[in-house]
Length: 110
Length: 113
Image (cartoon, rainbow over all chains, first blue to last red; front, side):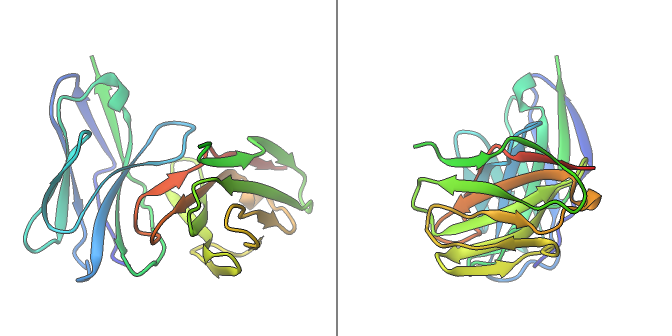
C-alpha cells in the first residue's frame, strides 16, 4: 500500500478556500485516492474519491495531476464547522484494507 | 436505516478481563472492518471481513479476535485486556470493496486499567 504524506495542521479563516495537498509517491496503477473527514468523538466520514484529473462533489474538489504522485483536496469557502481532521488515503479497488495516517488538522477561525 | 451501530459507547475493563465489542449494520454491506484510534493518531486496522464466514488480519490484530457469522454483525473480542488496548474502537462497513466509501459507527471508548 502506498504511503501518504500530508501536513500535520493548517489554519484558515471563514470564507477562504483551503487546499490540502497529499503526497503519495509510490501509488500503484490500480490505486484510488480517497479523502475522509473526522470530527472529535466521531467516526471518519467519506468526502471524495478519485483516480485522475479532477473530481467535484457538493462538498469538495479533488485535483490529481497526470503523474498521480500527489493530490489536492480543495474546500471552497470554509466555515467554522469545517474544523476537523482530514485524512488522505490510497487504496486499491481489489479489496485491500485502508491505511489511515495521522491526517491534517484544519482549524477554521472567524 | 440506522447505518452502523456500536455498543457499548463506553467501557472500563480491568487488565486480564475479556469482552466483546458489538457492531451491526443494516445496509447489507459485504465488507466490514474494525479500527482503533489512539489519542492524536490516525486509525489503524485491526481485522476486516469481506463477507460472512471470511475474516482477515489488519495492521494490528494481536490480542483481538473476530468472527462474521452473518452479513449484519461483526463482533470484536478482546481476549485478555491490556492497558495498551485503551483506545477508541470504530467499526465500518462498505460495498463493493474496502476501498469504496466506508461508513463508520460512532465508536466505543475503551479504558483498560
